[in-house]
Figure 1 (tube, rainbow, N blue to C red):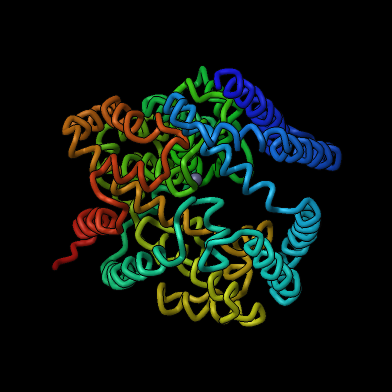
Figure 2 (cartoon, protein in one colour):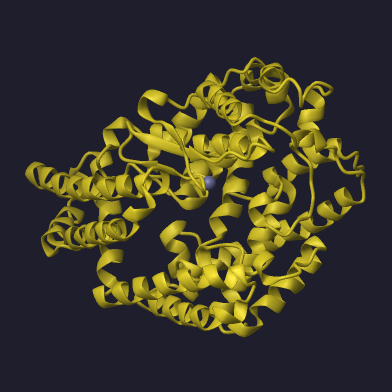
Length: 501
Ligand code: ZN
């Protein structure tokens, strides 16, 4: 048994190393690569991807996993978890034929190209036939797996294992029922003033203030770094090298600051896995939703809190003395929590954000089960924007064409993680504060040791050893639900906007 588990770890480490090499090429592509490198880089990433797939679906690995799966009670608990997770990954990988993978990648590359053009001309019809094909290919993918009740379940399971349509539909319906009237009540109140956050905010100062804060969060720059990119992301090549990225708009510091804090949340999670898991598939986030909960927690529950700004306002004003000359911490707190029903998901505030996500989730389901035709997608989109947010895009560029997801991957399984992340974040943060009452007092002093320690013990350490749902349930004493998130919104925004009842 001992030699077989050693052999398993050797094989899995090889796959992880190849993936890390590929990630490094991707990181470079999104940060420093000169434009001329694009064609060769695409080929290199594809070559490594094929090698990874070959190693990850090797028949010898399958036999080893079958063998070990029959004897997990003789293994150390962490090794038993490794066998279970690796076998799950293996079985998923071998069910999808190589020919499908090649067909799908070619289709997606072509769709992505056409999407760029369609977006520039705000012409959804130009890319609609490609999307229709993506829907067919997404159904075909789902059919490779058995035991799922809805085609979306197979796609959701890739990102948020164990989460199903049957669970999400009532969960999201309950959330939406509360959010729509809350947004309407807020929009009837006078809007917060955020005009002073537009002006002259030197780039270097934005970056240095953002980094000062994430150092306080506990993001470890000896095991990571931050670079500039177009669309911020976090990427890891091992627990000891977890990199974040950001972008800067010199006229508005919010983009750089909140994206830095968001990505640092992802980074803290990846830096916080049990070091013993390094080089195995267990050193990864438990799900998209749980990963997003960590970024949203540091971005919102921390970075958009009053306690946070009470501490960091003097440093913020010191960095931008002219723009912030006439305001105080409370004004900044109000400005960074301004609620505006808007057209673009990535610009949305905490209250309206989930409405954007649930709209996409429901449309994915309708496309997959044939209730909605691709040609009717823009109308369905706009109608739902009207009912949920009271705003309608003038062109499809600000509507159905705004997100890359449906044009660069499957239709299905792509959006639920964002909403789950917000729910998990609120539930975890409430539990952390209940278990460690010193968290608030520390935050007010710009210290985060208690919060970090609680998250490390209850969330980060586990990596993929447990499901997201099991982690949230064990950490908070209750299964995931929208309750804590809604309580958080009602308390915070009720006070900010003077809502009663
Ligand atoms: Zn994120």
